[in-house]
Structures are given as structure tokens and as C-alpha cells.
Image 1 (cartoon, rainbow, N blue to C red):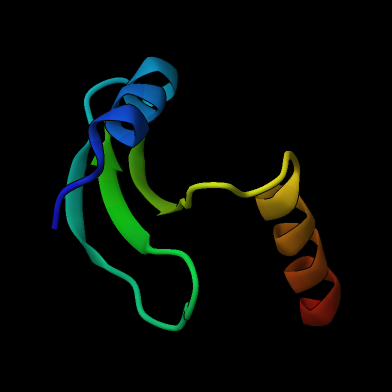
Image 2: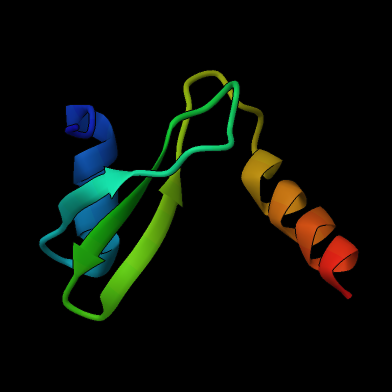
Length: 67
């Protein structure tokens, strides 16, 4: 699995060189992957046409459910 060029560019501008380790299941609308970056293994979920703050709001909701 590879990242679209614009996603790879955005990721690497923030974390440095990144390599996709594999896909992460569970999502039904947006792809999610584990990536290896200089700071360690990261989770990345991405999609086109999402409004600003969409993924941040989702992460906040998941944190609230976890509490």
C-alpha cells in the first residue's frame, strides 16, 4: 500500500521520511495506515474532501469514549 503523492508530501514535511508499514482496518470511509517515521511508528488516517478539523474532532470523540 502506498500513500497518494500529496499525502506523502504533507506527512514527510511534518515528520521526515516515512514508510507505510501496512493498512489499518476498521474504517469504512477513509483509508488508515501505520507508518514508520524517524520518531517511531505513527497512525495516519486521510481522505479527500474532508472539512477542516474533521479528523481532530473524530480523535477527540474517540478519546471521550475511551475515558
